[in-house]
Image 1 (cartoon, rainbow, N blue to C red):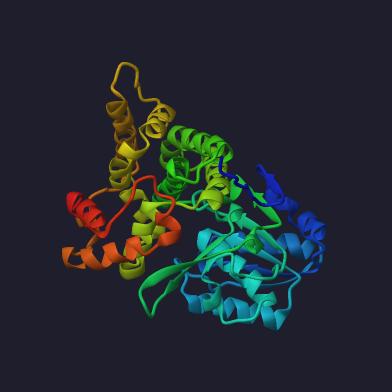
Image 2: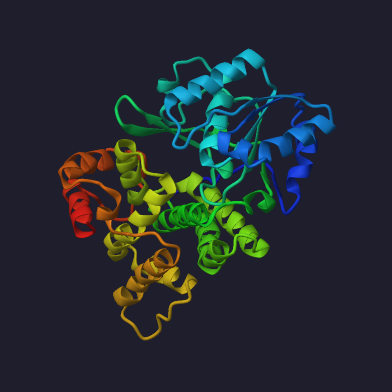
Length: 384
C-alpha cells in the first residue's frame, strides 16, 4: 500500500460579504503592514478601491503593487519582489485572478529566501517560510488560492515554469463570490473550464486518493450544473457561488496530485503562442480525455455520471466515452472551439510542442496513460 499525504491551506473564509472580514484575518496572522498584489483590470473594476477602503477604515497600513499581467513573466515577479523588499510588509494580500495570486505567492517566499528565483523552479526547493499570505480570488477557475503552485512565463526561452512549495500555501483563502459577479461571459467560460480541467486531471491521475477524489467529483458536479448558468447570467448569485466553490475544491485536490497531459500541452502551447491559460486548458480537454479514457475507464464513467449522462446498459468503454461527449457539449454551449486550427498554431511547430509537453515531468508523471512525443503530435493532428 502506498503512503500518501494531503496538504491544504490553513483557513478558508467564504460566502457573500467575506471580503469584509479582511482586517480581522490580517489581525489573525499578526499583520500590521500590508502589500496588496493585484493587476490593472482589478483596479479598473473598482475592486482595489473597495479593498483599500476596508483597510483605510481600520487604519491598516498598506501599499499596492498593481502591475501583474496575464500569464506573468519572471520579470513581473521580480518587480513585485523588489516592491515588497522596499516596503517590508508583514502580510501579503493577493487580489485577483490566478496571475495575481501566483505573483503573491512567489513574492511571499522570495522576501525571506535568497535569490535567484530560478533556483526554486521545481518541486519543494524553497527552504524557508514566506511572509503570511491572504489570497482573495476574483475569478472562479484557477483555484490558485488553494494551491502551493506558482507558474511563471520564461520569455527568453518561450516556456512556462512552475515553483511548487508547501511554503506557498495561503494562511487564509478568502472567498467572496460577490467579487466574481462582474466577470464577462467569456472570462466566466474560460476560468470555469479551467476549474473543470483541474478536477478531471486530478481525478483520473495516478496520484489520486480518496481525499482528492471526493473533492474532485464534487467540483465536477458543480461545474456541470452551474457553468452554463453563470455564463448565461453573470448575476446568478447561486451559480457564481457554486463555481467559486468548484474552483476551490479542485484547487485543494490538484495541489496534492498535480495535473496531467492537458496542462503539459497547455504550458507548451501557451509558452510559445501566449494564449490565455484557461482557454488553452479548455479546448485541449476533450482531446486528452479521448486519449486517456482507455487507461481509467471507470473514472471516466464517474465523470459522465457527474454530468448526468445515462451510462446504464452500455459497455464500459462506451460509457466512458460519454464523458467526452458531455465536455464537448459544455464547450459548445459556452462558445469555446476545441479545434486547434481556430487558434493559429501552425503544424510545423508540432514537434517542438510535443517535446516541450513530454518534458513537463511534474505533470506528465501524473497522467493515467503513458505519453510519447509521437502521441502528442498525433493528438494535435487529430484535432486540427
